[in-house]
Each structure stands twice: as structure tokens, then as C-alpha cells.
Length: 468
Image: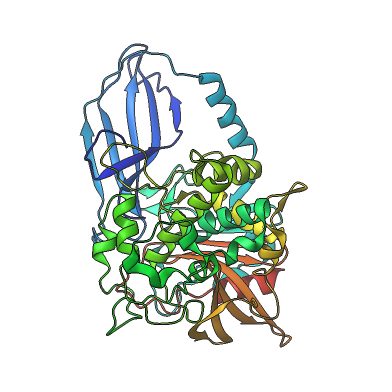
């Protein structure tokens, strides 16, 4: 947001208009959903607003904030309601016909939707009993919405938020935190690999980011190392695998240059490429390096955001992709936060998952590098260049490969599958399953919760096995 010091942005979504002829004395009514977005974080506060209008004036706006995805630095859940003044100034909208056409394409390209209860009637409720993944440890109240893409239809649960059933459940833009690392950053990297070759993975990031002499230990770190969370950097020498140790100085840095400087300034503990150590700092730095690679190829004005929009998202039917950016003092738009800044709908996430499940090909056009996509697709063996996360579920080790989480699952016939998933703080989960099936869950569990079982793909995998 330009020329403001506000901590917040707002994403306004299309709503509805109607008239209560017997009640409103010639006024019309309008309502719309919105997401209040913390500029430094990855959650959204989901709300709805309503106002009255006539040809040349509007009423005050009444609003409610009724749900949110998992908060972090501003750590409390909250609901809100109120009334704010509003005014209307007539004026033209630049290129309005193009905006209308884009919105029509957006509507035309959405998956057909149906209530999850319809799928229960189709396949049997007992087959979907574990779908939320909320049994045993994590209470179901943490789950905001679930969905399953099955036979081309997006079946989704209702959103029972603080004010009751939400009337715009297909339009909600959720802050999905680190799902961004897959849905945006990996998509950008594999698009670049499709255009310029998979040799990108072996390039040294030092060739694309100016490194101070004091950081020469970064010289042998590759793009693949960064994508595998294997830069060799630790949080501290004393406790290198501590995820949040010495975290705030990077987290609260606002500008791109400040974040790059802080991302570099952590101790080298391991040889790059040898050990998985999850760090948001590495993900942010990878996004900067990918944009520098793109600009080396296409000119200094090229951006990852525009490449994703025109070459990945729009071809698969995603026409809006709001993402947080770094906050720059000169008022410029900043660098897109591909570490945890994407605000997506369930439909967006289902499309991106299906793009991968289809080998990176959409309607005959190879958008992502097929070989790299296939290296993470469901199979009997973990990806060859994946690194162990050094944790297990009931069926075996968990892995990480190019910003994808890979999890083992054993079928009833004894065979094993490794299922890739996008995962974000709070319990957000998108699981790829064979047969063009995608499991989705949006949640808001706090980091202080015991979510060891909640963070597993196993419940979704069980549903896939029973209805495939």
C-alpha cells in the first residue's frame, strides 16, 4: 500500500446487491466479504460489510470480523464489529470493460462446487469421517473450512464462523502462511526451469545476489539447496535447529534489503545440501534470488509476480493472486513475500495442486518443468533429491523436496505411497493424491498447540484410499 504507515491492508471481494422494497424506503442494499491483512504476517481476518446506497449517496458501513487464520506476532484471536462513515464520489473506472472481462473469466474458470455433505451421500459418510484431521489431539474448532476436489467438483464444508454460516464461503481469501512457499515460489522456480532449463537448480545464488565479503560462506549454496531448506545455516551455534531462535530481527525487518541482510546473517553449521533445517529466512532469500535470475534473463523490469500472473496463474484460471510485499520507505510496491504472503481461495489452491498432479501441463501447454514436477509426484519411493526431515509418521520418514513436504502412507494392500503436500502454519494443508484428487484444509491452530497429528496428511490419504 503506497503512502501509508498503516499496519493493515484490506482485500475486498465481490459481493451482492439487492432491495428490500417494503423496508428500505427507496434505498438499495449491498454487502461484500473482505480480508483484513496484517502487512508483516501471513494470516487474514475474515469479515463481511453491508451498506445502503442510492444513485448519488451511501449510508454508513456496518462490518463484522468473524474468523481468522492462525496469528503469530499479533498472537491473539479476535472478532470485531462496528460502524464507520462512508462517502461516495462519482468517477470513472479506468479500463472498466477489461476488469469486467477478467472477472467473467474468473467466474467461468472456477471449479463446480457442492457441499461436502453431497459427497458424503455419494460415497458414504463413513469414508469421510477422518477428513478434517481433527481427531484425538486438535479440536475441530481450529478447522475453518475443508474441501476435496473429486471427479472435477470442489466439495467443501460450510464456514461456521463467529457470526454464523458465512454467506461467501467460495470467495474467502485465506492467509495460508507457508503454503505460499509451494504455491508461489516453487511454481515460479519450475516455470523458470521450463523456460531456461533445470540447470537453474545447480546455479549458485551468489552469482545473482550481491554478497558482502563477510558472507563468503554463502558462495557454494545453490538454488536447490535453498529450495530444500538446506543452506547449511542454523538459528544459533548453540541451538541451530531452533526454528524461532533469533527470529524476530529478520521477521520484523520491513524492506527487501533489510530482510536480505538479516537472512544472510546466521551461522553456517552444516555443509550446504546435506541437512534439512526449515527456515523462513532461506525461503525469502530464494525468492529474491529467483527474481534476480529472471531479471538476468529478461531485463531489470521483469518481476516474479508478473511472470506468475501471466505465465502460470492466468493460464490455469487464477486471475487474482494477492500477496504481501516488503514495506519500502520510498512507497514502491516492494518484493513479493513468497515465504508466507499468499492469500488464496480454496479454488486457487485446488487449481495449483491439479497443475502439479497433471505433470505441470494444462490443456496441452507445458507450464512447469515436467521432469521436476514428476520428481515430487506421488510414487512408491521418496524423491531422489529430497532430504529427510528426521521425523516420521506411522508409515515411515517424512521428506522435504523443493518447497514440498513429502509424507509416507501405506495402503491396505501393503504398498507404500509418498504423497506431496503444501503446508502452512496454523494447520493449513493441501495434499496431492493420484486420480486428480486434492485434499484441502484451512485452520487456525496456534503454534503453542500440540499439532503433531494435526500436521499429518494421513487422514486425507485415508479418505483418498477409500473413495479412489
